[in-house]
Every structure is written in C-alpha cells, then in structure tokens.
Amino acid sequence: MSQQEWDRLTASEQAFMVNTYESDVLAGVWGDLDEADQALPAGHERVTGILLSLVDRGWVEVRRGAERIPRDRLASVLAEPAEWEYPEDDWSSALTLVTTDAGRRITHRSE
Image (cartoon, rainbow, N blue to C red; front, side):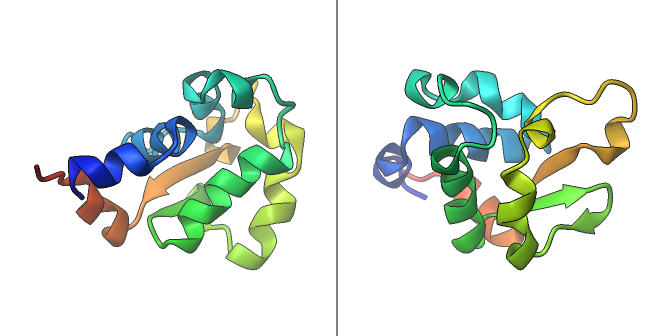
C-alpha cells in the first residue's frame, strides 16, 4: 500500500487496521477511533460499518478465540454493545481483530 492509499483511509479505518496488526481485542480500538466515532455508543451502525467494510475488503477477520466469526453473523454480533467492552475476567471470550493475508500485504507501505 502506498502512503497515498493509506492516507485515503479514514482515521477510524486506520485505527482498526493498526489494532488488527496488533491482534487486539475489539474494545482496544475504541480509544483510537476519531473523536466523532468515539462519541457514538458502542455497537453503533456507523462504527460497525467501518469494521464490516474492512472485513468485506478481505483485510480483517473478527475472531472469538480461534473461531472466525462468519460474515453473515458478524453484523449482529457487533451490534451488541457488550462486545465492545473489555471483558471482566475471561479474555478468551473477547472478540479479537486479526489481519488476513491480504491485510498483511497492505501493511507493507511503499512511497
């Protein structure tokens, strides 16, 4: 991905991508989103839409443990505000953002 292509991503798209590079839990992205998106309630369709667009591009997967959440179930899972919260005790049940092979290719930016 060129710097220009990266710059075309919104700040919130970039935040999701950085968090996938780190294989972070879904809740970890919230503080990195742009201010307008942070002001929305957890599970808001605008924020879930950003993540779903990255999934649809083939760059990101959402997992619970080792299980990939299928795309046809993902929107309803992400609509649950509790999924966007840090787990109280069992972190293995938290949704995790993972970069796909295609997503890893875009991590290598060129000038």
